[in-house]
Length: 269
Image 1: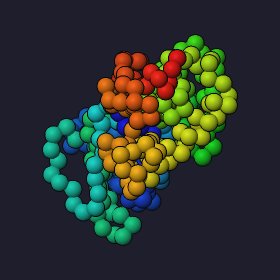
Image 2 (image 1 turned 180 degrees about the horizontal axis):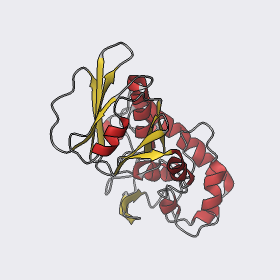
Image 3 (image 1 turned 90 degrees about the vertical axis):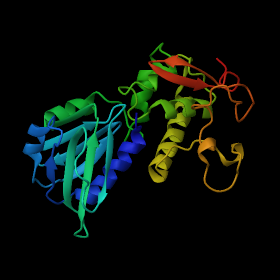
Image 4 (image 1 turned 90 degrees about the horizontal axis):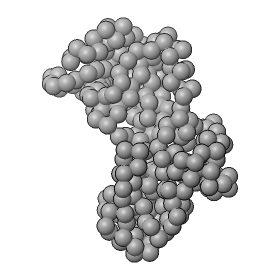
């Protein structure tokens, strides 16, 4: 599932391509036909993300998209290809340079038009998003500090922290030597403050790079230049491989329905 940095980057790209101009909205698949008809031809005011949710505001109506596990957006300049397959929604418009632009949405969990109170209700049930400029880390820690649930599960709870998924969960906990099985109430304010600051840095880097890189240069096979794909993470999807720091075999098990990765030595319980 795309994590928060992907949605933030996507919102920024779509705003630059479409915002401030009328957008032709269609649903070749037909499943979003009513919503497309409501938005078609209207001026797109803005696109923004919050956590793993994408919002596109057309006057008093807002398009809400959640990509889920299988949703994807594709698009770019020029003329779009002929619609094929399960194409839920297509945008077509004119970019800032006057050339044609388009975007296609396939396989989302949610694609719906909402009124302002419905948007507010979604935002109200989400925790702070580290990519939002006024996000409050204490709001997340208040939930964490009073919970007996494992911190590895709490980090995946979007009502606690919005935008963090499986990769950031595993990598953040490793970078701070925190066992994913530690109860939330065992993570004190100072430790959480360091984790939050690091998470903001990592997610902003993810927006800039278009991918998640969490390793430090000294822990990679090649210490200079961009991180190669196999060097990008400490523990995520490295089951059975030696820890980059101590050499202990990286382990995995299921936690809240997703594969959890950790080093049992660096992240001792």
